[in-house]
Length: 111
Image (cartoon, rainbow, N blue to C red; front, top):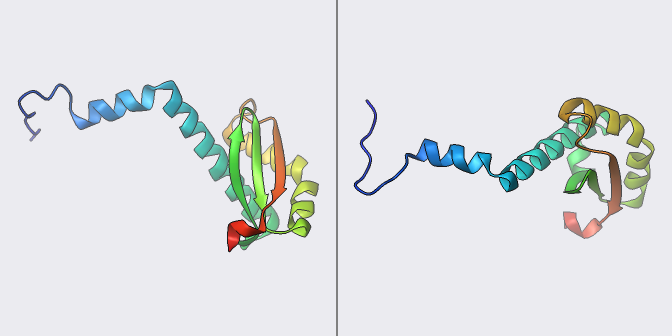
């Protein structure tokens, strides 16, 4: 049985959530989250199940995704995997959403 709206309430929670999901800024956030999820999954496949201990998705700016690595050695390893990583992430998210992957080293992110 549907709940009655409060007096003065103009929309249900479902309607408000639908409107929020349609906002352009929220659609960008959803796309970036999908890219980060795809990066994490592909990293686990290519680097190993302990990939989250070594490398994690960072910000997405324009079409460039960033991977934050714990050490220079991991950054070099991930950098060498970039062509395959990029191809797999594009397959998961749509080919036009991401054009490049950048690796950076920030060891303090894990402390």
